[in-house]
Length: 246
Picture 1: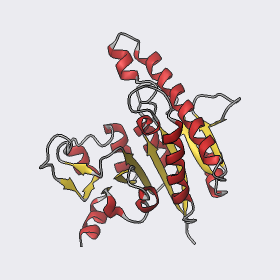
Picture 2: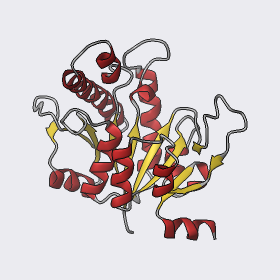
Picture 3: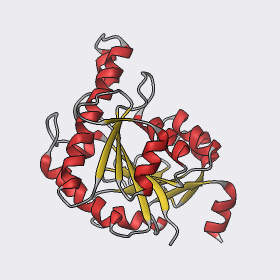
């Protein structure tokens, strides 16, 4: 059986409380169960990139007067907290898991080394990436795209909170917003649809990495997302789009 390597991108908000900062154990455990359904399909190698919005937002700190690099480094540390919380929840379900970080904290996680990460995936271990790219001025979306390119992942699963795909305007504001079933990377860039930052979108385009944007709140969607692109919006190259629409 051929194995499909994917990167799951989780926002920090997916792991946080509704009305206050911090990590919500109930949400983390719920997401871990969804990830286990995906893992149990036995034909997929899974790496996860986590954000930090539930704990710290570097842009908000910058707007309040903090120097950007310091704010971004604090955000990278916050992603490691989220990664460790998620690792604990997943390991309780019996899945061997490794957290790897771009910022070296050897007491709690392995440093990110591309070949070692790939070896973990080949041994059917789940890998969680914390610490972003290890340098400021880049988002965790860019981390997901970069790790996908480095590790040869075919697909990034962009798990969204309550939004089931990409729309031409905000569906929470405009009830007539149109959902796209499939887009090319170039259309994503040209239409400025804000699915991910431009650096990440460009990396995906240049390395032919597909992206599926889907609603993480629908039970079973993590497992469906690898094989059923109809649950969200697929972003791919022009040739695959034509085949998808045929």
